[in-house]
Image (cartoon, rainbow, N blue to C red; front, side, top):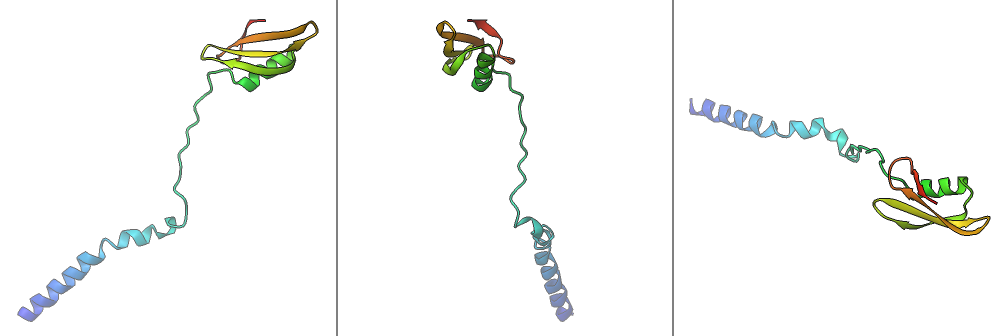
Length: 100
């Protein structure tokens, strides 16, 4: 009888020990790949400097460049037909013109 209990306990020990090794083999195909990254893009609610320069060039400002960016405004400087000029855009979506 002791021989039967020894064999049964040995079989139970092997069964319990092999159980945790079953999960990694099921997901072994994931080892070679990079983890999936969940990227969530948030909408842009500010005036980008590139958009401000594009709007300034479209309204006639040549050699336009961004000279100052604050949380409230984006300043673009350049030349028009009279000389040096600057345009100030609000730092919100759409880049509305504040002053010229």
